[in-house]
Amino acid sequence: MSDVLNPPQDNVAPTAVPLKPLGKVLAVTSGKGGVGKTFVSANLAAALAKRGHRVLVLDADLGLANLDVVLNLYPKVTLHDVFTGKAKLEEAIVRAPGGFSVLLAGSGMVEYSRLTPEVRDDFLRIMNGLIPHYDIVLLDTGAGISDVVLFAVSLASEVLVVATPEPTSLTDAYATIKVLVGQQKRQTIRMVVNQTARLGDGRAITTQLQQVLDRFVVTEPGRPIRLIHMGDIPSDPSVRQAVMRRQLLIQSMPGCPAALAISQLAIKLEETIIARVA
Amino acid sequence: MIDMRDLRLDDARALLEHDPTCSLPEPEESPTVYVQSVVDNLCELSLKDPLTGLANRRHFRNVLSREIDAVARSGDSALLLMLDIDHFKKVNDTYGHLAGDRVLQAIANCLAACVRPMDTVARYGGEEFAAILPNCPASFGQIVAERIRETVGNLSIFVSPLVSIQVTVSIGGAYAPEWVRSTTALWTDRADIQLYRAKSEGRNRVYIEQQREIAVSAEEKSMLFGHLSLGDPAWIENASSDASGAATGNAINKVNSP
Image: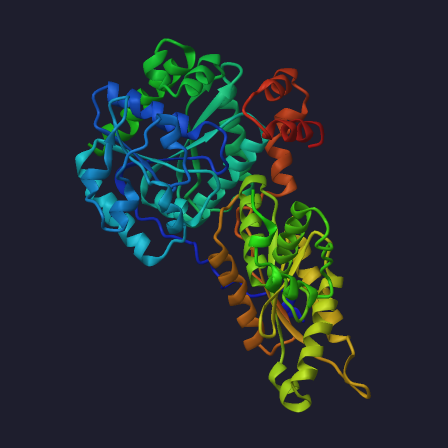
């Protein structure tokens, strides 16, 4: 009976992916959806492009992200066609309104949500082909933490977790960070808190998350987890307006508080990530 | 408008009349009611395993993929169990295939009785069954699976009027980890691996895959929301006035009951 109640621990989930990060790749993730992750990815890309960087945003959830909806782009050629050999990689890259490039998955990619070795290889090949042409590649991940998302995130040199102050979002951000620390042995994770009510809320939340991680997540000695607070994006009615009109906030209302916060975030990322790998 | 006389419903009607659970209205009913009923009954029939009355594999797959969506959205934990009758071939070889069918039916009834109404039990194929248990916390799965294993093992199945036998089952289980969007293939693979372990390590036992570290315990949650439960009104106001959707109601609950 004892073996039934205490099964051996050797059964590693088949989704465990070792970390093999590629330079200049920032994964924007949150676990669950609805916290403005795609909104952040798109506007951050626009803000970085505005500062003169060559930016590519990749729909890393293979068709389940909302990037096409946010950007109002429905290209004929997508990553799906690249995967199936119908098109070349260059043909699938589209120019987004904010002056950055986008690689959309296309709805047909859902069938690839199973991470086979072939999908893995294709993905890696595509990433390697893209990286030399850009200053930074942003990976936008969809709702849930699928195997494909975890794999895509494992390729990123940096991870930016988007959360809101809501308890559901905090739980989710925390769970995501635990997976990234446990599976990918990440030590540094960057946080941005969206829809904050007051100045300082985001930093307080990051500190809180850090404390819970320190208390409950066991890491190798001398390798503590470091959450780095990258900024807050305040609650701002302009965001809703821009989203409804399917415009980039950075373009349509560059002076509103949320847009200014995203520009700040872009500068901070530029200092910490782009400058360092360049 | 379709003329009823143009539709060839005889085959469908014959198929449904053959099934005791279907109740067809008389052809005198209004054509819409009649056709609707034929379609409904055919749908029902197409989802059932004819021998055991359990969900068939088609139905199972649909329920499983719905559950994957639910888990990814809600964060509820769901368990998939794969069950296989031990040494079933021996039953067939010793008592005949009719007896084998009786065993399958008896176990199907037993499984259906062992789980909650919200759970789905399916005949996966041959002597293999599957059960989908939505909203099943990690602490629960092993207990449920053990209960199923014991109940089946204690069951006396009459394979002929005078002969009753007992069979055992091996059970493998895997959770759809909270918030993670899995795939039907991956999830069943993981449960199958555990079933294989149960088989290869002697049968009549339960193996359930260890949950990944993604689960967030009550202690972790209480510490995460520690600052919220102090009753800072600005936080609560912020959560309730947020237009970002369904999570809001949940947020309030958690604020009130850390």
